[in-house]
Length: 168
Length: 168
Image (cartoon, rainbow over all chains, first blue to last red):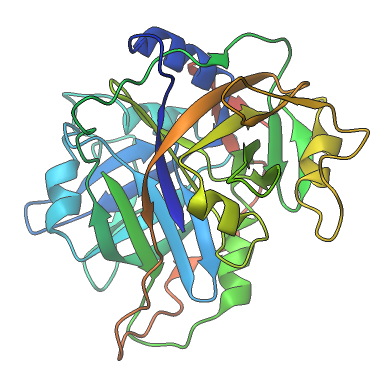
């Protein structure tokens, strides 16, 4: 079950900066999602990849509808999810940079027999079938998200990797 | 937009072990979600927390419907998301352990004036309003997920934290 929630209290206005400050404390694995909906290779860096279940093998990720890659993922039936290794920060930056050809050199890639672009250097990748696209709905009128949390605190984030917990 | 996808090819049966092996390469930040739907404090460790947008401030996480905390999150309107720091592996383990009272000592917690349980030691937390619950739908009959990826590869995962990339 995927739960979508808003930051919420009954007392104060939305504060996007404070929300961002909380999530700055969060660490995430980095993935690049590529697809070709018939208009050429497209791809984007995402930090929201999650495994939903192994049986059946389901995953999720989120992408802004204002991202240049969104129209491609909207129209494609399949895509490739690449999990990036520690040495691939430059690849992550490339696929998070606007206004460039992300598939130009030094990006190395090829196509699967079924057409999807695959990045040669990714640590691991999966071809996926897109099952559902859940739009972020507008919040109901009268909804008043706002302060209700403690965004500060010290230290590095806790991470989960390969079955155990780690510090960054 | 949240995209839900299945591991897919046209050629081979589902292999949950191989899917798990790919996601063992993925690193994730660790959070604990708590709620009280009127039947006492409940909470669970999740590694699927993601920020969907800052304006409006929206987040998502996933939880198995077989988790003991799911009925509480199903029935609660609000919850608290705690982001764990590097020193809180024991807290993460506690809220991932079945058959124990996760709120018993040494867990330290209190309630918000609105009733939600808050863990005293979390690095940061947000009170949230649950907006939507998206069930993981059954895959369509005839759907044949399976092999279509490269699960092996060397090295540590790439992480995104506080605006930059890191190795584990």
